[in-house]
Image (cartoon, rainbow, N blue to C red; front, side, top):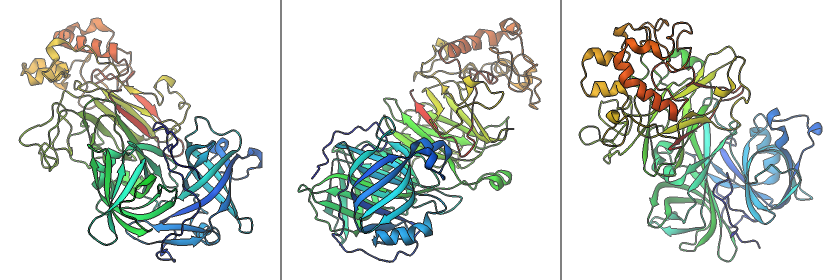
Length: 626
């Protein structure tokens, strides 16, 4: 029997998933008649199988034309005649069913209209591998004990897609339920570790489940029709548990081996996660729904599959937006590459040009997050959202997520709906702070389009960047769009040389406008440094009516509102001496280090990135300390 001691990489999606051997009948089956076939997870076992590329001309129907080159026939041999299933929360049912029942009854009732996603674990060439796939067209030959599917490969541990047939052994397939509602996205998690153990918790059927020496990254998988998968740090998962599951603990399946090589399969409800940094382990309170537990026995190579984070569109949009909103969210994957913890904040959806973030709006789901060094985490943004994200540093929140007294962050601190400085932000952050400003799904002649930028108009503290995730956007720009600014990176990886008079005691850099306000410069000079519209200066000031009469970028021949109302290059700025003396050095420093970052309010022409996808939504990666 193969043991699960293969050397694994944590840098490839799904590469850490434990493999399951044939056979799973070591306990009672729970309810044998599930109440709702469409809201459950099905688990299938086989001794071996073959993944063979499909000849495209022979394929008449496909999930997506863009995925045709990733289509395969999966043939499973020596299939276990019984499968496991378990219901989604809040139900706590589990049981067994025959493969024939699954193919003849469950599949036609649930998966014909929308093909399901599935996770396949197994050994390929004696290397432990995992695959994330779309499953279609099951064909079961009971006499030969053979089951075939047409599958579309969404992601793999292999560096390149398989060009020839792969033999896979010791197979477990977890078939995800489809999203239950048109206005709901469903996501599942996969966590793995070298070792696990159950310990009694003092109540019958309830245990403490320990994942020891766990792998830092878990995997975040979309349920159909969503076809996306991302990394998610286990430590961030534990911290954000209440946000992810909102008091309704999820069900999970865990597969593992004893030291004697015996397969163990458990169906659980898990809750109350705790991260033990000193011993590098995660603990859950686990209520057993299926499977015998031998408390204290070490378990090898456990895979914990956790069902069901639901994300749905916000109810805070205005009537026009909510009336046109449909299912789906943008996924923002955050990676903190800094050596310190960052508290990422957000606010927005104000829907005005002149007042981008002044009032209370619900933030994107999970967007006010704590990111430890090297954390991967995610949050969701609804269609049509517009606003800003910014990094907060040096924060010292109390157990209630509030500051004791005033602002307790070194930079970027913000207040909640009750105007108290807090971890949850409902207003924009205090400068100096770098800001990422996205607008999602804005109307355009070619369909909804995203545009976003990174801004140092309010100074900067920690550098960030944002870029579209591969394979989630149209590779070619829309007509009239510059390829340089199509779905590329907005941000900065190199700190500008901050002028000495703008530096603060924490190493952050004020913008000249914020410097003027903070230091109480005369009103007239503040207006000039901040481009106050009271100045009526056509070279540096926006018109309060946003009709394009004022405002331009000193670095380009075009401005934000009107291409013909901008100043000539540098010489014309001499009529605004405070601007020349204080702001131009700052702009020079920003543009030298970060050419595509906003240096001041109307620096649009070379600082805004556009991106769009014909079908679906674009996802993004936001990197802190890129």
